[in-house]
Image (tube, rainbow, N blue to C red; front, side, top):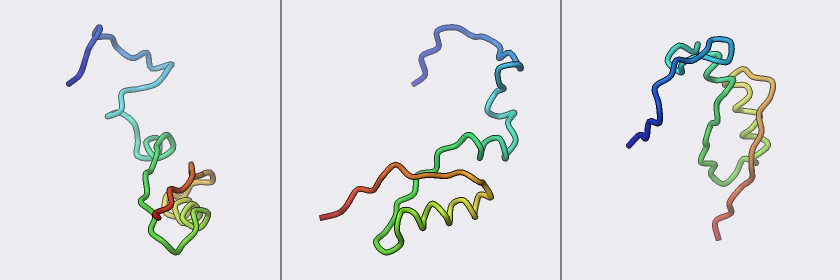
Amino acid sequence: MWLIKSEEETDERFGKRPEERTIEEQIKNSIVIIDKHRGPTSHTITEWTKKIFQVKKAGHSGTLENN
């Protein structure tokens, strides 16, 4: 369910509608959630992700350990 307070147009000086963004813009401004299995480190997964998406910067927010 969406709660719409008011209908407004986006000023192109400050951004654009999501459906108008290029794939490059979407990747640049995205969060990728990865379910990491045991084995590779979070650092390794981050490096693989940078190569796959061809970006210079990527990071991780931590790991939840299964006990």
